[in-house]
Image (cartoon, rainbow, N blue to C red; front, side, top):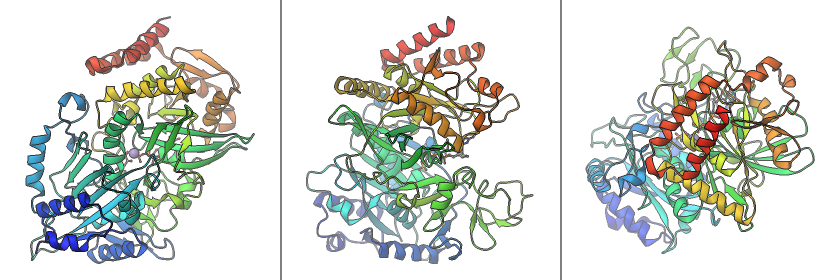
Length: 608
Ligand code: GTP
Ligand code: SPV
Ligand code: MN
């Protein structure tokens, strides 16, 4: 039985904006759910939803003593990561999506989606999920409403955002808000039993940047389905930010206090599964430095009143990669995950706890793998899916900064770009200028990870770590960074920009740099540069640490390893610069002249 418009109007909260109610009625008429439920974001509501999912087999309660109030979800094996090939930017003009986004004509896409969504929620409840990205009421925050037929997505959005009544109350008759429609695409007939992880073989993740609107069909996994995250806070937000003069960035945010007590804030962009969560929760190997967490995935950056660049973390939780998270690599996260966590696609121990590759030095002799099969160390496949994740509230993070949810945001002192690069890119380099930094961001490349479909390890360009997340033409995004930098320079001074690479490999194929807590030594150099406390040496690719300015031997790195970390080999570098030439040319006339200028200067410096 399909819900009626009268019932929707009867059930909606009294303070719900009429435009939201009318939209919910329209989507309900299209998708024909059995019921419509307005989420208030309360703890009781979360418990009820979790109970429903436990009953349905979507969530498995973990051992209450070992992992209190925590659950394991197992997705369908074909719904384990973002699907970039099914992600569309439907701008009115194809040129506005740029050459790196999948574009489709908005009218044609609306017709396709109308067909798919017709009756898509039959037999299910449609949840109305209002959320604020950023502290409720902050001038930097923005609101959205997602409707979804997945309780897993509701509960996840409840952790990842400020979800519920307070967010809905933010929407007054003239407040802009982002509507997001989501269905798992698995309607139920009257006699159909539900499955643990409903989804569809047909998937669409669609954005209309001018209309600020999102539609997603067929997947319940992560960024495909928790639309507040990548779809809103990056793709739609990059389109909004371009019009309003602020930047949506795939960046972690850190608060760092140096031994003299000076506080710095750092924003760092690394592609998916390249160490943002690790760096955001860095436990320094060096004395006297205090690192606190503000965000681990998304930052919204806006010029402030005094010419400073201010940042908020628009999210309220962490959707982090589980494999590789262990006491030796990320002890802060291990503590954070002790209770109140939803795990997705990790392995189950025989005593009802979770496990994944890298959690402990020893591998349990028997596990249930992420697909629910028996697993032993002899099994040919990993116990946890490489993109298995945890969903946890930010305030559970032991190193969360007390200013993490300051409505005014925090002032940024340094910006870092990084990726997984076995060759060519030094451990750290400082950009000569904002323009040079934008060039570093624009030409960023990284070896592919399991965070999206595709061949793991393959090198690809991932400008600003935003390749899968830009709602605009990527080269317009570069111009936007240049414009914001110019504005900052006029009123104050723009943050210094750096590039890092924790992943350079030696001839034997092993990492040259120990990484993790030792990354604090690089961060120390970066912030000493910002404070003017340390020298740098000029090189064709940027300013490098002068001899003696980083105590690498204390990190267990031998002098010959150290020189390999900074080696500039002319042949592979020349090949990379030639490749960059082709990469930039692919963006045609949209490439800012400053970016081409930086490219020519790099070429000239390498020729000298
Ligand atoms: P998304 O959530 O997908 O955007 O990714 P993220 O950038 O937050 O990824 P995350 O921090 O979870 O990256 C995890 C992967 O990076 C794991 O495989 C880690 O072991 C690896 N990693 C993180 N930091 C380091 C490091 O300093 N050195 C090395 N070698 N690996 C690292
Ligand atoms: C990423 O892939 O960069 C993520 C995970 O942060 S997801 O939210 O699924 O996009
Ligand atoms: Mn991410």
